Length: 275
Ligand SMILES: [Zn+2]
Image (cartoon, rainbow, N blue to C red):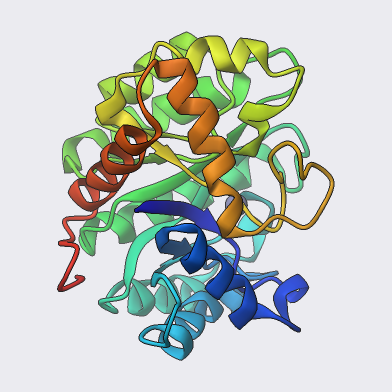
């Protein structure tokens, strides 16, 4: 069994065939999917949880969990009402993570200070609810600015919680991977691992310990080769897992069982009873 640790199942692009997408994932051997609850804006944070509740238990559908959080671009919209909503969502048993949250200095969809404040306020809520976090971090081209700020914030506002988290769609260098592992984070690889120009990322991935990796689709974006450019879907996480297995020099079954074990360990879940 494989787990897609990051998919935007609430995307409008699945409006017509969400059940079909989930069943294809089930048929492909994807046993669970973490549905990311950022919506198009903070008001939509609840959608991932709604999808979990709608589809969990339906024949052929992977086990679904949800997250909730405010994406860096939406940081200026964070107010007390949004934080109260986030807090109540994180109290739900299916909502196992806070995210994706973090810093995006590449698109800079919100001013950097607002992104940092928004991140810190969400860390406080996630800590109180004892939920690991899903981090989105994207620096300016050829820089490490967002990573540097991120690690400074995590050192002062997160490390002491011991809750850890996931570096989602990891795209940093070895130094950033090393610091993530040192913080007790899992490093999650997405479809871009399979792209021709991603050799630097493959070189980093090849050095990761198998007990610290996850795989994800980030669907509907970042479809792995040979589907690049198409709408991505959880079934295709197998492609990324297969490339990662090659890099780490292990069998595909070992990547499947290791990433599944890593996921359950981080979120303190057991395969049968859920959270
Ligand atoms: Zn995402």
